[in-house]
Amino acid sequence: MTDVSDGVLHTLFRSDQGGHEQVVLCQDRASGLKAVIAIHSTALGPALGGTRFYPYASEEEAVADALNLARGMSYKNAMAGLDHGGGKAVIIGDPERIKTEELLLAYGRFVASLGGRYVTACDVGTYVADMDVVARECRWTTGRSPENGGAGDSSVLTSYGVYQGMRAAAQHLWGDPSLRDRKVGIAGVGKVGHHLVEHLRAEGAEVVITDVREDAVRRILDRHPEGVSAVADTETLIRTEGLDIYAPCALGGALNDDTVPVLTARVVCGAANNQLAHPGVEKDLADRGILYAPDYVVNAGGVIQVADELHGFDFDRCKAKASKIFDTTLAIFARAKEDGIPPAAAADRIAEQRMAEARPLR
Image (cartoon, rainbow, N blue to C red; front, side, top):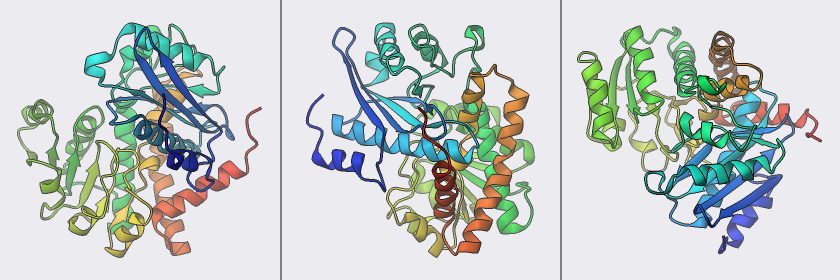
């Protein structure tokens, strides 16, 4: 893998955005595997984070995404109270076209070569069945099927954690955690988003959805003929009148210079990683009076689940831990108010303090 620019290398070694401990470029010519494994920190324990399978436009873009995602996992795991650092892997290519058993096995061998410094799991483009294959070559694999000793689909608790974050935002902003009769817009009703719809409808919220896949939208509308409506695209969704909460649940960068000025929602709380397109967006949200629940805090239910898999999975134990996302989110809002900073900055401070007080893995 070549042509990684000085800009990416600068990010890798720059302490404020980088500071990564290790980055591994992986290539297996026989299977066509090209992957990047990024370990941001092992201060709290072995790095834990999923594997993203995506058709990046360039190797540079893939490296940059791996670095950003790994750093985000350090903060997510710290805020979730896990004894894990942050890591992430990306496999370059369209999973619909190039994903094979041979490629996944090759990837598993690369993860295994790190000797437990990085524990992998599912992410965009990878699924439980894929982790079952990876695990044949690497024992540091989570997100496996119950039949293979795993916890299964981690999106179940990811959505539950986002739901708890929404309840905390409602408590902070409106003085009541109930979401009954609140209008919630969800962009992306795939692995996590469709579970989130279930939680919201069970409580009596009105839900508006959109997704680039018509079949995903149709599945939700067929299941919920009342209380759920659909709009054409995200641009329409974020401008929907009367929206109380906006939940980005697809890819990152949803909150940017174009979308923040036109948001109608009072709260942003979603499952997507890296929702803030660049530093400063969190202040733009605060300036508009929009309460932002930091993505890596509220979407931590999934990582709580896969981390528990390493110790013998117990769903009730995991759900109890994920329920604490409500309290953690409330604490972040309180810290933000006390320090006079946006919630995203408050969450960063709390996570950085926990990492700074820990000793690196030896």
